[in-house]
Image (cartoon, rainbow, N blue to C red; front, side, top):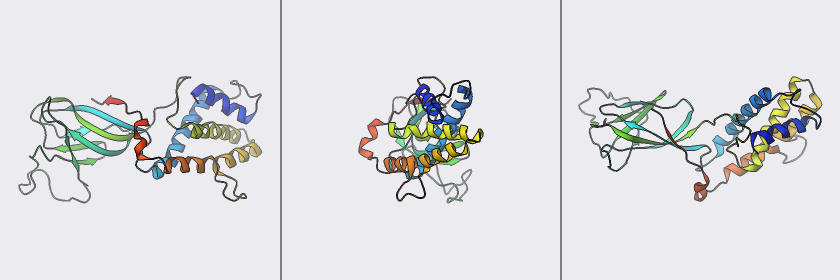
Length: 234
């Protein structure tokens, strides 16, 4: 469902008579986006090899530079490749654990980082360090496969990056938030059961259970359904 329909659905779940005056778009959108990330937190631990919110990030590989800032909305880094010469081939980067490898980097004659056929990288905070540095600047010469945070739903036609059966969790959650704030506790409990299941009903795991079932069995053979958006962080 697009954002405008999620709003309508959330209000209807509370009451068919509820209007945008009583539950304004500003407050409703805030709650919908909060639940957008809540549902994402359900999916990430069980998503397997088909990443949710998969993206390919590009930036320039700058002459003599080893440290590159990565966007704060990056949740998980899967793979990196670099191109050392304009028009050349991308080379896979070996990722090294900075915690596991305690040997010094700068000025260490026994640990060389000058082989452009076997580049390495270490990630710390909001930076990725790639060695060796290039001897020329290559436009979009750094390529990173990553999982990134979602962009908020803002425009009426914005669509959550979830499969259709999962999207209603956002409107149910936003409806529950409203009911809690308005002290509509009976309706709030009803909506919570739809989200998490009724503990008194065997095997009722609610829509959260449906989400976990869907995203834990998605096949890697269907990865072409992920929309990889080319972004440049410069």
